Length: 225
Image (cartoon, rainbow, N blue to C red; front, side, top):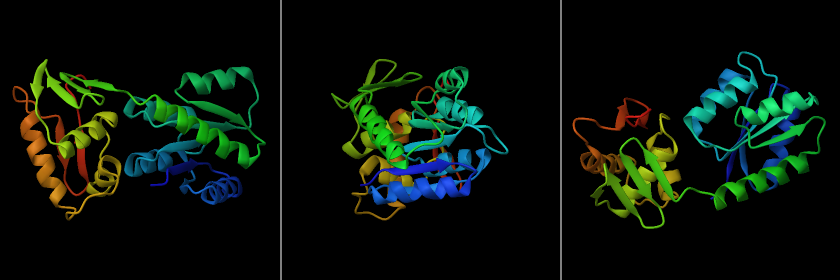
């Protein structure tokens, strides 16, 4: 499955240029032309990596980056025409994984994106903790308040995806693609049955971390969020 790239850039020429180069390299890519549209697209499509311009209309790149970083671990490469050292520091401090100054060679952007994705993939957390729930991908184990919880392989994959994207609404199609690598033989609605059983396993003293967002999908909210 190819990686999906979200490009948030208000200069349509540059955005299209970057998109073409990513698609030539085998990625799928989409464009958002302002900060608010980019933030919405990131939440709706859960891209594998974001190319984010610093200077954006409606919502600046720094605010977009900070907001996304509070919600997920999606890698972000920031683009800017500014060369000041303080701007680079600001971008990295806001949560960006890399920083490229305009003008740039689009081949370099693709190469840097590949490097970030390789690094992120090699650093995927083996242990995730959200509120009282802890998940270990190396041992395929889950505990709630240190009490062991038995999950099926599908339930475990779904929970890991939810925990890596807290507070983000994920549709059925996104869950199938992200948790099950599109290798799911049932209908979209069949995923509901897996989530129903997962919710029963995760219920903890009246708290249910997996919320149904009617007409949109599901959202994972831990007690410490």
